[in-house]
Length: 307
Image (cartoon, rainbow, N blue to C red; front, side, top):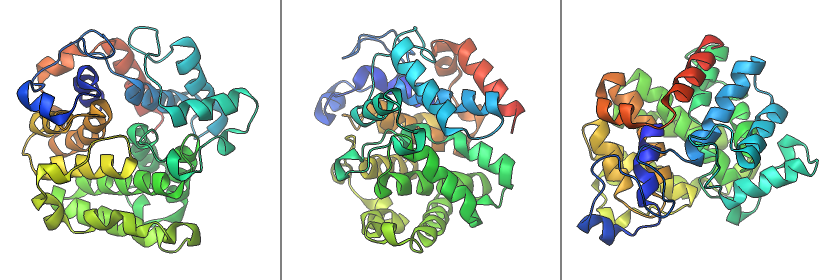
């Protein structure tokens, strides 16, 4: 996740045509945020907040997670350089509500316009907690899906955002257990079968039609793939990149070079590609280039010990 995020940071907000002329091919600095090469953004920082909270509490504590989100935005904790240089509007609004005294579980945005990708981009570490808590068959159980809803809803509580997180983690689980194309089909099926049972989600099942048919999704031309901040587009783009490449590097570079919300598309695609190709599939020079690597290693180590 952090690699895909960091590759995308210097290209954020650039359009696809610009990146076709001058594509991202390695870790570079600069861009809109003017950060050094290997700098990861809010995507990774918020995932680290989740990991640090579980490591400290031993369980999911919404209030503690939100406190860490606030420490990230207000104090620059869980960042590579001690400064929060990017915070999405829906995430920022949720954190502000929390700081005004709203309960963590009630902080997330619930409107149609609150369906940015800010909960999807940070959700992947939750997969390993669910596996540890419920076993590798968690994806067939209702309680883990409700816990995904809780974690997403800290910032993004609309059904579309919650469903995106549930589908993503179901697909991630299936990638661990089987091949990529079958994983996307199976993961989407398991997730949507759960959401079909919940009245408030039924009206939004149709937004996932394009990912139900993996063959059709893979065959879409690049111009049919959108890469802005809408969570449905981000998930579609990440899956499309995974389907149309055959390596970790190929997947994340394809994702980043789609343009616009490059760090998050790279982050979401990178999480799945990391599971698909494993540690050995990550380019070692990109690992070495990551900023604040000791922090990443330390939090991953602390998180793994409680799973």
